[in-house]
Image 1 (cartoon, rainbow, N blue to C red):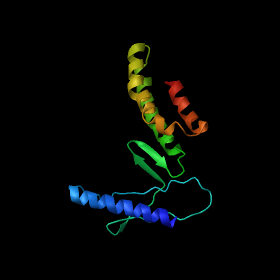
Image 2 (image 1 turned 30 degrees about the horizontal axis):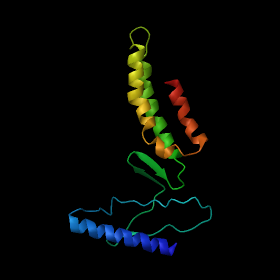
Image 3 (image 1 turned 45 degrees about the vertical axis):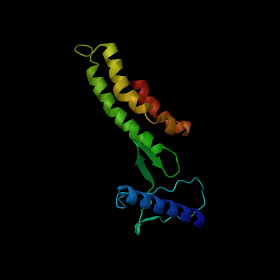
Image 4 (image 1 turned 60 degrees about the vertical axis):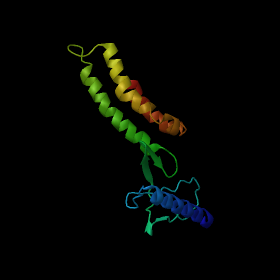
Length: 144
């Protein structure tokens, strides 16, 4: 673990030096670290520094709209995605009233734009998770 930590620190130092030379800045206060590992036995998290400021190690981090967990379970992402889709599903339920609601093709387009696009985004990443985790999205998908 010490060798990996030293290699990570060297990579971060080189990245910080490159940023300084090319006019970019890395904010150590906004930076976070996730130790992704599926080992069961206890081992310490790495301590990585940016300009003598230790980067805190967190359990979950959001990167490009996908929440990565330290065990790569993607359960936090699926739960967050389900919550967002259920809010959009409430809009669909209001618009689908029989007396004054939208027609079927309009509702299908709204579904594709608001719910299916969210489910499809990042599915290549979180699609490798367990089937029991992915099954939590099925109820939202089928009810819409």
